[in-house]
Length: 200
Image (cartoon, rainbow, N blue to C red):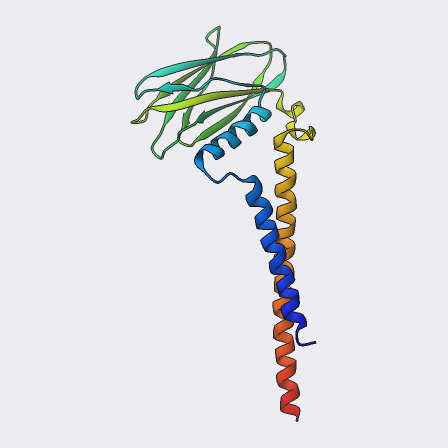
């Protein structure tokens, strides 16, 4: 019975190793694979993704998107593909009539914002590079994102990745719990064993 603690701990450790192996099988190991992986996920999460455009410091570029529905939210995002600390964008959103939808500052790799569109409209995004180096950016748009759910399609890489990572996370938590239980059993057995020796 004195060996039950180590056996339980070993089982927990095996589950932790299995979970990490499962996670590493779907998480890319180098920069190019990570970029491809993230691009694939974004493609499945948005209705439209623009081509990559380079913006030099002080210069601006424009993206446009025409909505097809009325009274639906529009999720838009700007991604700095080759982000480095210190990169900074100024984003102004308006429509073809000159109505202002807001000004935004982006200091992170990705910026997401939601807009309520009362009627079919064409939005213009003016993106200015206010950082100190050239940056490559893409714009992403998803109209009525509440009804656009890539996770509902089991054939997408997004769904497959989420399911694999969910199983991996489950095994990781289970392994940690079992390892803790095994450690507690070891300590209890050691204490009981010492108590038995003293009684002799």
